[in-house]
Image 1 (cartoon, rainbow, N blue to C red):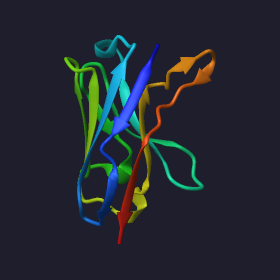
Image 2 (spheres, one colour):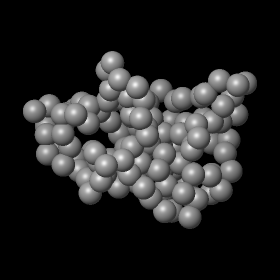
Image 3 (cartoon, one colour):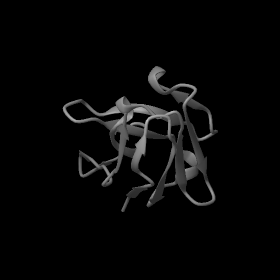
Length: 119
């Protein structure tokens, strides 16, 4: 059974930093691409950073040069270092595979972790 557990969110002022972590189980982790997604109130969930099995990273334009995704294959964990945070980064952040994993035909999401950036 796949499990994705996100942590590390919180409330920070604009310009601050947070480091998110996602611990996974039930996956052949080192073989899959992983990503961080976010969903702001009233908006669709979007992919903000992805990392391939070979640790090649790509980012959505709005977070380039501010966010860094990394993975630890020994611990089946993926991280998102977020610097120079802006109020528009406020959202619930989720990790998942690329594309997101399905369980019984439904996309499975963990509980996510809330990031709130105040101006």
